[in-house]
Amino acid sequence: MTLLSEAIARYHRILEELNAAGSPWKEEVREQMRQRGLEGSGSGVSPVLRPHFLTRRQYDSLAANAEALARAIQRVNQLALSDPGVMSRLALLPGERMLVSLDPGYSTPAVASVLEAVVSNGHLHLSSPRADLPRGAVASDVLADVFLESAPMKLFRKRYKVSRPPGAKPLVTSLLKAWKEFGGTGKPSVAILDFPGPLGAGESREDALLEEFLRSQGLEASRVFPDELEFSGGVLRRGGQRIDLVLRGLKAQDLLMRYDLSHPLVKACQQRKVCLVNSFRAEVLRKRALLALLTDESLTASFPADERKAIRSTIPETRVVVQGKTTWHGETVDLVDFILKNRTRLVLRPNEDTSELHATDGARVDDSAWERALRTALRFPYVVQERVESPAAPFPLDYFGELTYRDMIADVSPHFFLGKVHGFSARLSPPGGGFSSAAGMAPALILESK
View 1 (cartoon, rainbow, N blue to C red):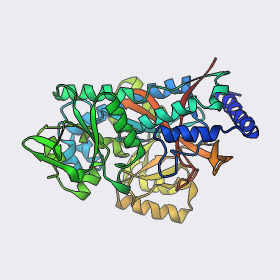
View 2: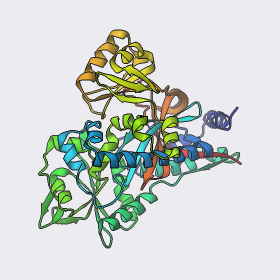
View 3: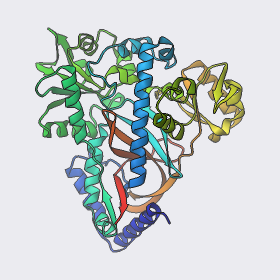
View 4: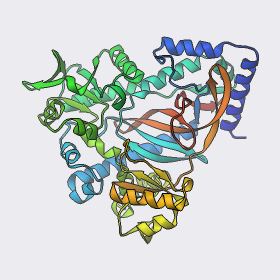
């Protein structure tokens, strides 16, 4: 058995023994979650009863590959800003292109961001870039701390070394560095910006924890909705409150759908009167067409060897779905014909996640459904990707007070701060996707032998 499989088997045995002995540890964990702000409205972050472990070797590999990818993404971003042909391949909306053109006042497009990856057969595979702030870093830290002090983990740590990777604190350091490069002085007044209700996360526990954390670090911080913003006299405000730095939780596309380019936030950015994190230039990270650019060797041939190696080993072959010829692993193919003939090897994904457009896994549908999905992909911005099996593993769950096991897929999200990885979070979902009460955040910990 490997270190990881042996450790997981032992952890599960500990749970079974505690459960048989009638230990109240599950209730104690839930109470700690409630006290630490992780529960609300009767539900927790997730019912998962086991951390998602990465071995030290896996974590170091994740960090090295992710940081090399971050450098490659930065190069593609710079190419897109200087070359309209490259920019057009990202399939940005006209309004998005205008926002991306705004100089944020600091050098990196994403001060703080995440990538989504899965671990398959010991190898890491990037499933999607994301421009989202790692605002779950605070919740992930708190959840990990709760589990580290739980009864099962105290027994487990007698045999294994377990640690929580650095999470939220690098966020503050990165914000202040971006603020200083922007030209700011002193400590900025911070607004955490998102939509209220279902469209955004403005009322989420994660944002509440982020607000509380920023305040604990000596920053003035509050959660703000777009309708509350005003811009006059060269100052962005919410009521009488001056805003120096905006932590942007909403997508540029959603902002443009609800408002237009005259929104106070856009005006403030145009005049360089507010430091926006992440900048609108980070919207490039939301587009899966970015992966098509990264896997296009004609574009990346001059990139450093470590970046090209990270791309080859981590990113599945990706192409924007269009009529015509392209290359696939070095071979020239007619893309539409290739997609039709290789259904079980491929996945069709929208260029950006939306509620209207959905991914189609060719291995899970028949030929007629695949043809319908391809017709949709030719009408809207889509990419086709080489299929990577997302392995499911049994996780113990608290199901209405009972210990049960379900197969779940773990998505691993390394947290980036100014291009460096500091920690990761993990979210579980059932195989095949869809809503499940079992889905949610799991504690993220690094495992080593003693």
